Image (cartoon, rainbow, N blue to C red; front, side, top):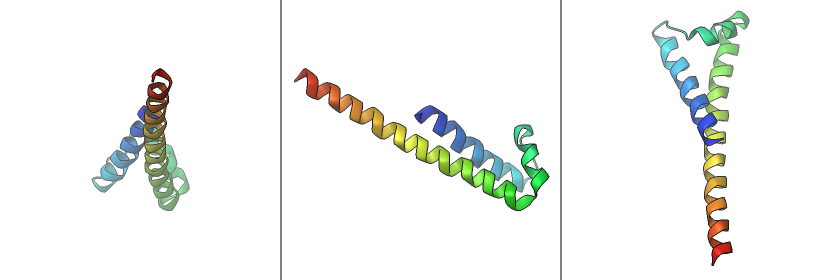
Length: 73
């Protein structure tokens, strides 16, 4: 999940930055059919959900390693 989360967050940040220079990724052109406000909500949502998945993936991976270390001791 860490990898998926990082891709989502990076893609959301890239979409936000590219919006300021009037270059929107082709994959996200459909979100502008509902207006600018909805497009902003979707882009910010990508960043937030991606960050949550990234940090949750990191926490579970480290807890799995700690559990394996406890079992071997």
